[in-house]
Amino acid sequence: MIKNTLFLDALKGKHVERPPVWMMRQAGRFLPEFRALRDKYDFFTRCQNPELAAEITLMPVKRFPIDSAILFSDILVVPQAMGLNFEMKESIGPYLQNPITSQSDIDKLITPPIEESLGYVLEAITITKKSLNDEIPLIGFSGAPWTILCYAIEGKGSKTFDKAKSFCFKTPEKAHLLLQKITDYTIQYLLKKVEYGVDAIQIFDSWGGLLSPKDYEKFSWKYIDQIVESLAPKVPVIVFGKGCWYALQMMSRSKASAIGVDWTITPQQAREFTGDIITLQGNFDPAKLLSTPEIIYSEAQQMIRDFGVQRYIANLGHGILPNVPLQNAEAFIKAIVEFKE
Ligand SMILES: Cc1c2[nH]c(c1CCC(=O)O)Cc1[nH]c(c(CCC(=O)O)c1C)Cc1[nH]c(c(CCC(=O)O)c1C)Cc1[nH]c(c(C)c1CCC(=O)O)C2
Image (cartoon, rainbow, N blue to C red; front, side):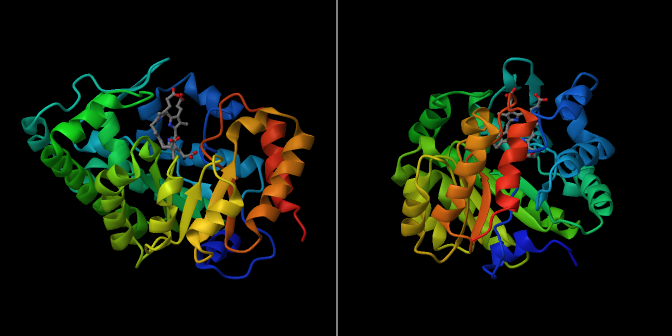
């Protein structure tokens, strides 16, 4: 039994005294202890070493009174396991030398048993759960198939992901084949994560907002929903679609326990679209953590009043930025932990 039940209670829609809080990308570059490790090991080495991954997962937990941990890893370990050799390049970010261009590239993708290809993630879960000692829950995650396709086709980050989009629009049958392959393997992966002890799952659709509402339904939601359907009977699922405000109503009717929202929508609008039937998570502008602790504290508490205390998980609207001062992140967490109605 997890001692701090706030996060899981909010996901279940149970009554809470205050909202739980965690930060997307909390196990990352804004922490000096993370940057110190970074000088020693390259990114995917850190992901592949279970002890290191567990150690990084716990870094923000030791520093801040957060209500959930999220396993340090990356969404790109899934396409890596399928045979796409992603690297993390300084100043470029994720990079794939031979992106997918053809049917035969899709046919060549492999789907080994998860214990073989991603055993290091499962091991990291075991170690992390032991260290957490049931104090707070642990979130496991994956990318949404659409966001994974974006990197698999484009080969690197992009503002528009127009190569990925043109692949989908020109050769939709190929795109659907690829999306289904990614989906099936992601489901296997997430089910294993649950078996190894993660307490909740978050699906990151960082590039969902690049699609029109119709194309989002076709190329992204259709596959996210399959993941939700497979996982929801076992574990609470959070779906975060960056820029996907137009899909909130559809998302709220799924079996997801919570929907993540970014800062381009007001809490009131998000509640309106989702009809109060689902937990919402978000949506503090990550760049606002670059203001002052006083401003952050007061705006974070206003955010709680705007969403309401119940059925709400306080978080950022996207990942924390690397240049956020520690005391500013602390002010954000403090504002939530100290909130009184
Ligand atoms: C799109 C995406 C990726 N990875 C992820 C997403 C979806 C979420 C989002 O949109 O932010 C998800 C992710 N990546 C990471 C986590 C760990 C858990 C957490 O703290 O939230 C999670 C949940 C660690 C990481 N993943 C990455 C870092 C930084 C690594 C480093 O430079 O040391 C961390 C801590 C690298 C990464 N990995 C990826 C990108 C675009 C980058 C940044 C590249 C850059 O800016 O240089 C792919």
